[in-house]
Image 1 (cartoon, rainbow, N blue to C red):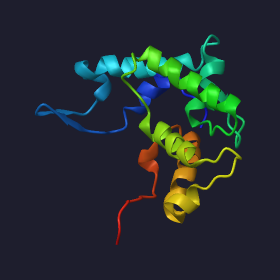
Image 2: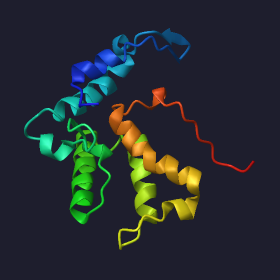
Image 3: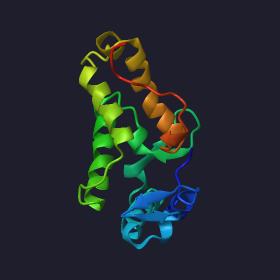
Length: 162
């Protein structure tokens, strides 16, 4: 899914969700005053991806569609790509004072890099098992294709024995 604008992000929040906050039912999160600041900050991050000043830091071409997508979905395989990914996360941290992250994007990268060998071999399947290995390996690509929207993801994975 190509990158969204801040306006598109805000409109995507008007999807019928209902939140219960401090005893109040909130049916439009974009109109609820306590959430407007955070929504505006996230919308700004989406707009930054379109800004020529930040575009190369925050986006890259999807290997599957060729569309510009968030660099948070870059599966770094080289030192240069890892530096690019770090630059993207660094800029996002600066813009949010380090207080916000996209954990569904960051955690798969972290787990994947922990188990990667220097020679490029990817032993994650052997270390954590075939099912979790496949889940981690697919997670970044899935998020890239669906613009980070994992609510639509039909696969549910539970760690544990049984």
